[in-house]
Length: 556
Image 1: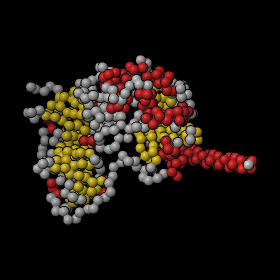
Image 2: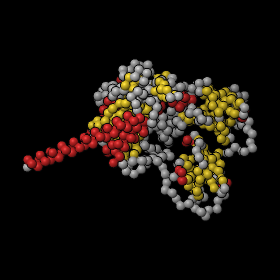
Image 3: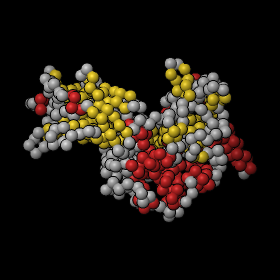
Image 4: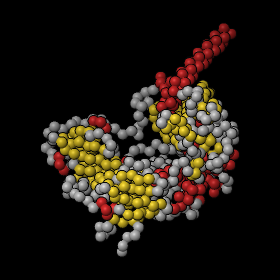
């Protein structure tokens, strides 16, 4: 009996020793990878890896302060940008559990002065990025506010209260909006009657032992062991300015030590019910399955369930991923411009590669099995050609006929061959998808479905047309943004001009539709009155749509 007991004990000890040696080897591989790409004399990063509740790797590489050559340590304080959102999500889950709020509650229940958009916006809409609220980074950039300006929580709320229209009907679509998370913070402050920073410190961070973690609410606050961030210009590191206090959507200050405690908590038995709730995505009718939950994205990575989020602000680039079924998590924080997901993916591969299965892509990626291509169809290809408005991506599709074949070209992409499957379906190899043509009651093509998005047909510009571009010239003003733009015509070229954003050329793509290469107004659509006069334009970015600018000094 004793011999069997000691044999079992020896087996367990040897197994544990081999596992420890294996993890140690994986930790060394992780160090080798980071040391290859991050050097001691440049801005760098921090990484932590948790397996089965234990820290199996934790290290830092490079400098926290490039000018003063201060090295990073595991107690260095990073701004983790949008990785902050999961803590707002956790705060919402805590208050839900306590019966203090419901995701079905109307925002106006807690913030009576919140604008009336003609549609109810619920707390769930804010949490799941389904509210239709304009994303403040996009809107403020259009207003001429620079990302290196001071951007306070109060300014963001002020912008919300001035908003006059939504991107879409709440609950009908998903467009990522930082603004919704800032509004949720204000809701929590009114429920708890405490500043969000103080409440999260008391209810979340201190109970978890995260003593060096807090939401920044003063842009000029002096923070011990604060990490500086940098970008490269002409092969020289330059310091990024960070005047942001966007509590909830961003602005969490933490260390890799503290964040490791959070990752351990996510995988603990104590957190099981709340963390399970935080992984439930919002449901909507949209172009793709929803995968955004409580400040976390839920998907699969090589067949493994993954809960993750990334962040980027002022040259801080951050990423965390939790694999609940493998009891594995990783976080990487960088203080310079770099592809942080690439670093994290390498770590994930080092530790989990033997468990990978299937495709890297998750189920939200839409692709089809290639159908049988028809060789017998007698089609009038000219009825398909034209320009189609890819509004979701603020670009357009051009479909042309060349030598008896149809080709599709999206903005800034190469032409792709379209192969007929039927009179209304064409296959594109490069997309691993079909393009579907939609007709009206008379059989005329009025739109296409591309990447599961409806693209309306637009009237193309006649080849011999000489438009009166001077009709677009003038001064335009947005009351919502309290911002002005000029449309200027010089040497036959239209420009969009703003005091702070400078000016950029406008490229006409259909009658009154223009695009340009800026990140603040890539799409500009002009509107006319009954007399055919230009009276306004609407500027759109990916997360802030149809911002109205009215033309000034119009004659009655």
